[in-house]
Image 1 (tube, helix red, strand yellow):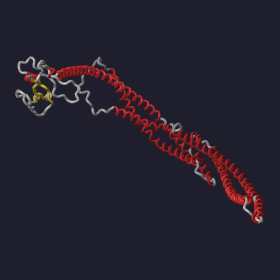
Image 2 (image 1 turned 30 degrees about the vertical axis):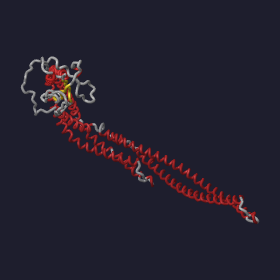
Image 3 (image 1 turned 180 degrees about the vertical axis):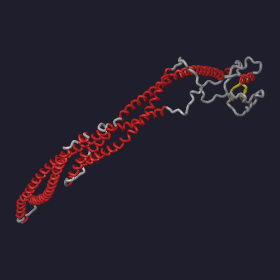
Image 4 (image 1 turned 90 degrees about the vertical axis):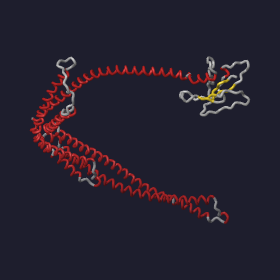
Length: 500
């Protein structure tokens, strides 16, 4: 009797299968499940069992009779079929199948081994290629670092020569200006003294304008733009005087500082000339120059040497001190060109601004005066119209008296009708309504008379206010246009200051 080996489901424990009744005796392995030993962890845990089959008399046992005993639910693949493991073995078929199942690899493991070899080959080859590329790149970079370093050093030395030349030229120019400025300090003192005396005239005129404007009346004593401009002009004149006095005190001490600054500039210029000669020689050196040598430790940092920022700051500080001293001297030397001209310009601008404020104020006052006259004329005309309206209202009330008398007479006469004729007909209703309408019309007219009389009194008050305001505007115009502008036009401010 033949035997067939089939796959069982994955099992954690052994479960014996009892043979059916009346079956012939089988080897001890029949009826029991076996699984893959745990000493092969790379293989799946599979179970199988040996069962007896009864083949057809005329059909031999082939691979088509071997079916799996377990197929996972939901799998779309074909069931696993074992190859013919019996042929070619001398021992029993079940022993041959069991031995082959333990000793052979699967197709999946064979494919995975090939893929592993491919991947390892690609990885090692790519790594080797990266190493070679990195070595070549490092060689090119080191060559480029050497060449670039020499180019950068040459460029930096050139920039240093440019910077040193710039500062050397600045020092030379500054020294020439300082020497020329120091020679003119004596003339500055006399110009400042004359400028201080020349401001007194414009200051007196501004104060007189303020005194005249105090004579304005009523609401015309307003802190307007003209008054603000006058006060600002006084402040400008006094500030100019103070600046001139302060500058006069500084002139005497300026000549002492100029000589000390000149000595610093001369020393700095000599040092820069010497440094320029050394840097020019270094800028011309290259790999083929003669006299090149090694100097051990020459590249070490010297903490006693200043950096570029401090060097530039020192040169700038020297120039700044010289420029500061020269600026003070130039301020004193060119008093008519700088300080006096600036002060004269400020005074003249403020003088012009004040005159412009006067002009605008006068034009504004004239415009307001004209508008006041126009409004006064309109108010006067409105008062006349209101008075005429009052007369018309009184006449309208008088005109309503006769119709009321007629209506009352008719009503009185109709009361004498006899018996049932004395009824309230449509004529009676209309006459009663006529009397009521006339009474209401007269009451309305009387209320309008009261309103018109109130308006008349208001217009009279407005006329009185407009007349008073008009008188004040006339006085203000006389003060601003005739008195203030008259004295301001008779004094040339800039000529008085610059002539000093």
